[in-house]
Length: 280
Image (cartoon, rainbow, N blue to C red; front, side):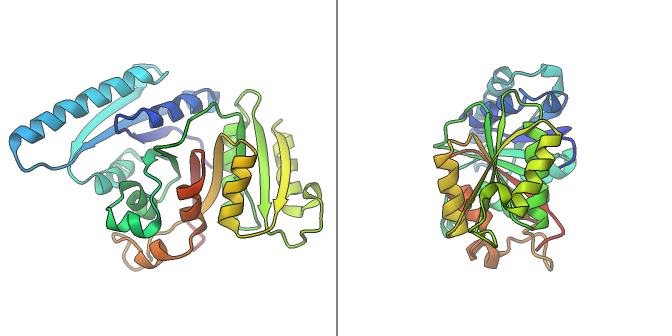
């Protein structure tokens, strides 16, 4: 993961995304980042309704700025009107954001499509890392970060992102999890994927715990996160945009058995989905 210099936060007035930002700002690696706070007012039929929503959106942005533990001169509040789904993607491109942070209702794939979920749409089409926090999740200090690993390029990218965050967070422990390793009889510390990751972490002074498990990947990852009392879960997520039509959601993948889709819905902690554009 490259250095996080620009963060886009879609704020909705619930305060969860702002709290995630505050937890990230504990890390010196994040403290110099420039922050864009975005609130989108849906298009309204009447001019009176638009004026009311714009005023309400301005207050939401002002409250968010006052909540975040950062020099206000580094915060760029943006109030936009239109379709939230496309505006978040467009602003992420305009700002060249290194990370998108937004809330999620934790809807399943089909329900997300039917209910026009903003986070699902952005997750589908964005080409950069996303940190999602569900409405029912309690945001805690990031002291226990779990990264789900296997031998894929996207998992390697997820490890680098987890290390980038963990190395500067005080008293942070990195939990390295490998579900369905090739040799389940091996001790977790001897698993080739985990042992290589642990060595990489040791070079950066990051404390690690290695765990292997067998079973269906999505449920097992979520269960491990809960059992280990994880504060942040990091998962590699390949670029999901369709190769033929980058501007349209890939319905087949939305309805498919995506691991990242399952985890974003069922994990009981904030989830950082790390993009790797070289993997389908």
